[in-house]
Image (tube, rainbow, N blue to C red; front, side, top):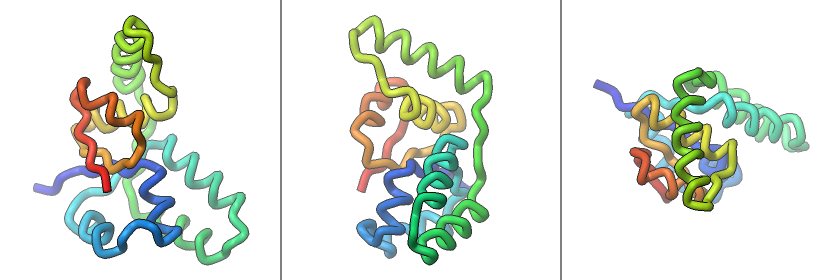
Length: 132
């Protein structure tokens, strides 16, 4: 049975910039179902529109066509509200986009591949983060 891996924007960008080792990235694509949040899609499409590099634009287009894009749902929003309310009670509000991306992984029982430090704060809520 295939596992789900959820890519955060920072790892996709690092890969296309050449700062993330291709040898580590490609097995993840071939051995798992790769998903991204619609919020990651937004960030990547914005970067694609702003990029002057045609090769990068095409690589991003190909990547976006090859992954499962997960929309926001009421379940994700409810879980994010539960987590954020706990964080606020601790005086530690999480950035909204990171919270929703991380919560998408939690709800869909997927490992999140991310180098974002805010994602580490979601481990206490059941997020499995894989960093490189």
